[in-house]
Length: 453
Image (cartoon, rainbow, N blue to C red; front, side):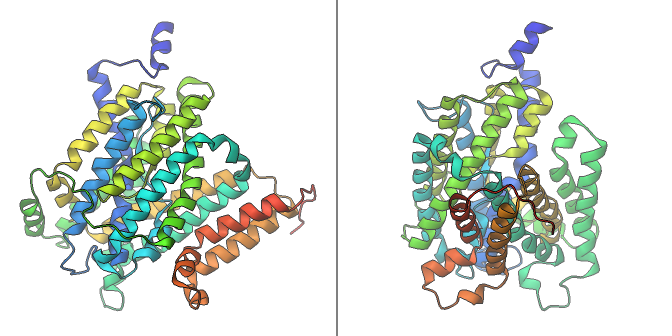
């Protein structure tokens, strides 16, 4: 028994295929919905997403396909490694929610034309992210839990509006009688209820796939209620190709200062998140600290994976924290298990028919799924903030950064006279909040006084 335990904690150990394949697919199921959702949100913000009636709506299929394909490619970089690139650990990569608040103002209402600048920013930001691998340890002091917790909370708060809009019927339905209808909320809440039920009353494989199962149940309910005609599913599936390769520079190249600055700044936060995930994997699966080589390799893989993804029209990739929890739960540290999951993702990404089914998900059903996901982002931020010693100093830093950052998110016209580049960065809310928190945390002297408020 002891030898088996040593094997399970070894990243190079390969379990029997009968066990490795289900474990690998479990990792994919745990992150599948979260991985494709940012592409759906960005398409919706640009104006060619669900319910838009845009002639560019088919482009959403390509974005979904690339999200799956390059999540798999980036994961392979982490597990198989390429020279110094990759941690050699069971780390799953996927499309990052952290960048969504930056991307929404970049593409808002601009359609497919906005994607050239967006993906050019992804490539440059990815290269910058990779460079952080050389000195990631030296900048960690500037991002204590006070800052990282604030940033994660801000990411979640930026997305909760999207979750409610989707649940009520989607942005295109606003100002129509259907928006916020009982049937829309029935579909959304059915997903929430099923997801909670699966998560808390089941274990292992089924529990890990709770969000996916919830959306499947909501999808079936939409068919039963007539919201989703079977004919539209058949049409979308039939019109999608059986196999397709990614297209380099599909949307062209356009240098946008706002996009480049935004992606580079968020890369710092993403890199710190990856450091935490790497530490979580080694502690949860092998009860040891991560080595400098593993942390540096993981950061290199984050950046290179993102840069390569951007070349083909995929959004930034980062390590997925929910899969860190799976490693801790199963105690299987084998990187080859996650490699199997990566191969599964790549196969899915090369088969557009899978994306053809995904894009028929009613937006209300997706809304129910993201209510849970985005709420969990806020919860994760609060969990990080629980590590903070809430002195008067720290409370003031948090208060000012949150108020300005969140305020700019909900009232973007407050900075309408700023130059376009600066305005886009400011209305994200995320970057100004992070900047204020970092600067104040570095400048203000420590104190031991606790507020009585």
